[in-house]
Image 1 (cartoon, helix red, strand yellow):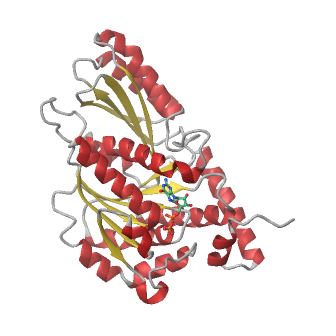
Image 2: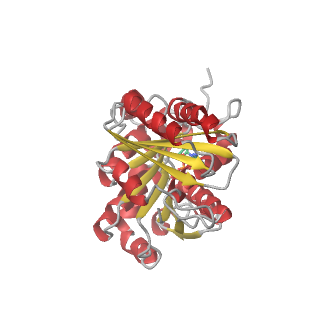
Length: 359
Ligand code: GDP
């Protein structure tokens, strides 16, 4: 699937860059453009991709703190300029646009849904979101921001692929220490998904194509991505179990959104050397996914890669009714109520969030 990526805010920009780098290093050529927009100058300076600073007259390059309403307003006010910058970068070759953001902050949280709305009006191709949910240890204001952002982002986009920041972190590391590693994992996993529809030189044709990803995400709402990999045996018969067990892991423990198993639609992609992928394994794994997700629409396909491992990717569409999302929205609502009762504005609350109480 050929895509253009637009990162909004700090997390959005960093993840966009990581995805572009992964795609470039592996030679997949699925990423046709990568661009970052932010209200904070310093966050943009550390990026190698093309960038654009917005909101200079209002926040002077210092960012919006945790004020996602301000993030949305600035994006709205400068939408024409942002669209002008994007003009020519969204090539006719692109099958979709992905707007990438951390949902708990300000610029991405407010700006990404607003930018998505503007893009939808101009481009015919689908506009998807990649949204990062704050970890459980992040404060109430992050949860409240993310709740409001997710609601609007999923309304405006063709689907939001959600990544829970707690899902792909290594144990023992604090969230901040782990961001680079989480970003690499996001880049590898989403990067493989995007590349799955592309023809890779010298390894035969992929049987997954972009329309399968698009159809799985159709219907809007929230999507998730699961991933697992294992060493492949030379004998494909031996890989039946490798494929079924990697599929189980991808859905149950390797997912970007834990506790979200029920889905409207699913796509199973089995990546590996074409001579080692066992048809029977793919078929069994697909059947298992049908039962487990309760979906009547489970697609499947191979992604030929020159590798000694087999990787499974499970893309789920329509997971918004899952336990994880219901619980998250409840927490976000509570946090928002508390914030309103305390009378604190969002920016102040955000900055105070890292402070411990004195007693
Ligand atoms: P913004 O610049 O105002 O959009 O806000 P940030 O992107 O800095 O932060 C928003 C949220 O994104 C935070 O609550 C974190 O959960 C998350 N976040 C920040 N930086 C990163 C990052 O590099 N990687 C990941 N995965 N999440 C991040």
